[in-house]
Length: 299
Ligand code: HEC
Ligand code: HEC
Image 1: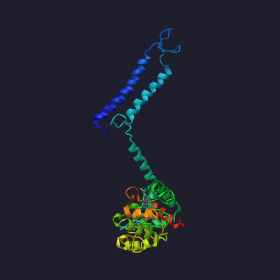
Image 2: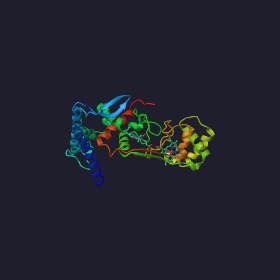
Image 3: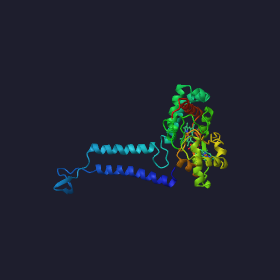
Image 4: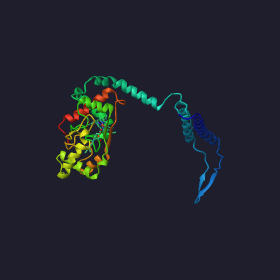
């Protein structure tokens, strides 16, 4: 919405320009061709001169048509400041109309899906197909079009879960969102953090400095790591603390990356979709995600 002063200015400028065009056309069409002799504009390029003829009639009519079209347009559509136009058209109105039409058309279908448990939807090829389309609209930007994720964005196909892979848990993740928080531990100092990183690598059977790993093991218990990741490092899905023993990495397995995670901590957010999508869509998405991890594991 414009302020009323701005609205008046816009209205005046728009109407004045259209009427101005009309005036020039009218003024030009009054020029009569002098009989016999045609004047030149006085411009000359290497002896070539320019006639000062009025525009041909058909050309003038085209200009008149544009003026009339413009006048009709600005009165029918919202073009004059805050004036809504005689058709009462608006882009939000048109959008709402399209949304209403889609709701009318697909509403009953989604209502049916909303009544069906996620587990059953995961068995229904048609539901999976719709879920996949929804996934490619709302989720692929972060989790990838093949759902295998990227650094910081979990792979949804590997059967390894931060929060849990039960249909209801997945539905809860998508509906309410998640907020993974690993606190920074820079205060432990560089050496201890290296020890911890070596211990964490050892948990997944990766190459490590066994002396450091032994020290790291003690630190893991005494520095609070175990409180979240569990005494054996197997993770805690209630708070999204990853299993550190399975060689599946959200951020990376190199000593450097692990040390970076421990030093600076990590903040990660899965947005909530519950206020954006209806229950049918949420369930279809859950069914699709659930179905991905039921196939033979994709590495
Ligand atoms: C803006 C990026 C973003 C979008 C969009 C997004 N996600 Fe996520 N998602 C994440 C992040 C980041 C996490 C990990 C959160 C954490 O580490 O705590 C996550 C976690 C998840 C998890 C939990 C995985 C686990 O291991 O427990 C599921 C399931 C999931 N997303 C599904 C979806 C679905 C389905 C959609 C589309 C409706 C979606 N996500 C859209 C970023 C996104
Ligand atoms: C308050 C709970 C909490 C504590 C304490 C904690 N972590 Fe974490 N840690 C998390 C969470 C949650 C994540 C996942 C962050 C995310 O979703 O982005 C995580 C992620 C990690 C990762 C990344 C794993 C990957 O797959 O890339 C490593 C490594 C790690 N923590 C090691 C440690 C170590 C070592 C300590 C002790 C110094 C520790 N954590 C202490 C909660 C915790």
